[in-house]
Every structure is written in structure tokens, then in C-alpha cells.
Image (cartoon, rainbow, N blue to C red; front, side, top):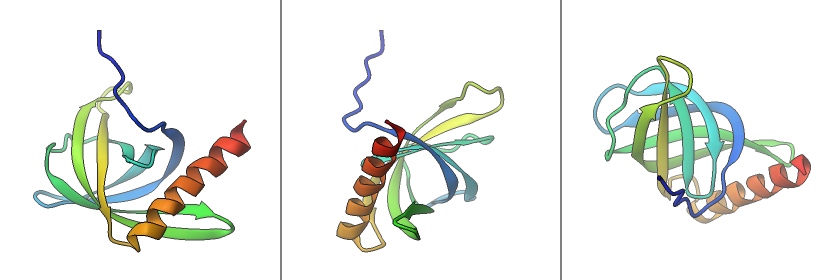
Length: 118
């Protein structure tokens, strides 16, 4: 039995994301879920795990589109439910775009989505 060891709750959220690994080609995809500790995305290509990458995406909050830039570790890559697709787990290492305010932005965004969904 596999236990869910996730420390931070994730919310479902779809928006574009650009992933640029240190090695190999980058990819443009969609975020499937987000938490304060990372992102889940889907793509049609397997990507190497345990390497660092940069990600760029936007979060809408308070009537603004906020660009987020972060350095992440590619933590997992496994087959997704849809054949030929892969779920890629990205763990935030640090934020390039104003580190403290970016972490607060993500927390505020998640709270906002949870409050409006419930």
C-alpha cells in the first residue's frame, strides 16, 4: 500500500507553464495542480527526474496576472491516466521572482481558490 506523504494540500488549477531543464529540451505544458511546495503538470514526453529546472507560469490574483519564476527539482515522472501522457511532479527549490512575495502570492492564491470553491 502506498501512503500519501504529501505535506501540503494541492488544488486543481489549469494554466500554462514553461519548464526548462538543465539538460535536454524544454517543454510547454499545462499545470494540473499546485501547492506551496510544488506543481503537477502533464505532458506527452517522459522527462528525466532528479534534475533541476526553471519554470515560468502565471497566477491570476486580485485582478492581476502575476508571473512566477522558480527553480524546481523534477521529483517524479509517471504515466498519467490518459494513455501516452505523463504526470510530472516539480518541487519548488526557490523563487527567482521576489522569493518572499512569490511564496506569499502562491499561498494567497491557494486560499482564494479554496474559499471560492467551498
